Length: 531
Figure 1 (cartoon, rainbow, N blue to C red):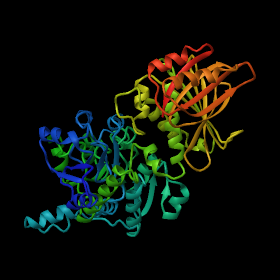
Figure 2: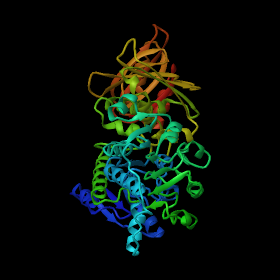
Figure 3: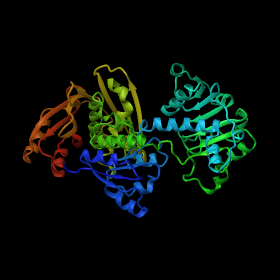
Figure 4: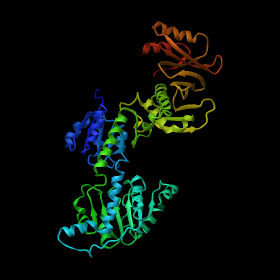
């Protein structure tokens, strides 16, 4: 099997990752810790990159990756990947949200138990020859209240495991329903109430503007005196600069950290990490043999499927591309892309406003279909590789204003896409639909004219005075240049009025032939469309 694709494995990915890629016929380059110069060279011609948390995938690196199609994070967090920059470059970003769930949840539970029973300090004391039983008197978790902020897969797993220890679990998560929480035995509360009522708080959220500094000196007055805090999620959710003062004044009795704003932690955190009531581990949440093998295997399968356009499981910035393998959506995507190609070729060069209206069954996929439309529309007018990921970014960069509208009902067709071109001189409105179950895509309206034109081949579209001899004149000019007419579509309002004509030809006419057809009296607004 030839190696059509090449992937680069960084950050010491488990060997199973490379094995999976090779079994799929993909060339593998493994470089755990390349120098910046080596990485810049290696990235130039690879189609996929797999990272953990060390490598920064940023604008600078992406600008050198001319063939890159997908970046995969073997794990959950993608703080080290600039997703907007990847989207701009048309690069898919994937992660493996399930692979390290158990390992991270178990680590968080271990830290909770370490805090309440003083296990790390007691171990160190005994190793140093002391027998300090009274000094390390602990407390039970049984009957205490655990507050879980973020009830995704990991947070929910922590909650269920600590319930088995007899803890009362309350939680905050804006995306979990009360029904689901009740089913799990968790009481949903607002975040401030979780802070007030919890004996132990464990956070399991991404690091965002809303979660950064979620617990700090600013809201410390809400905390139950002597609360224990655990962070196995993302550094910065607890305001690190405030934690030492909160420990020293007794607001927080003990703190467990597995993640840090900067990793490894910088020297300014040394006093906090050395504090006797702090348990700290070097980002070990996902560091089990099972988790590392699982995420490595998953990301290899996901990237292989994505490169082969089979599936896009785990994609973070490719809603449209993720739906491109859906059997229901695929025909609509093809229609939208081809239609966008046609619209670009009949639009004026200064077209800036495009209204796209979807009616019928396709309306529920409007957002995705607009992405597909733009890939077709931008294909001829941008030197970048336009795809479903970056189409809107490129359209915005070019100053295109896209307006979407949709309705679930269509008067004439079960599906209809109608495009209006604001400021276009010749063709201002075009509608297209799909006939039958196959890829029989047709334009059914141009301005005020009803027409049936298949969206394929090379097509000469023009408006003309509807009078005898017009078609004969056009076909004569084409015949003089050995160009045969393969199909013909005509739309008109009434006899002797204007009409729109579309002629499908067997051979692409050059500019001289088109000029000769345009010169025929009564022929106006001629456009050549190649699909």
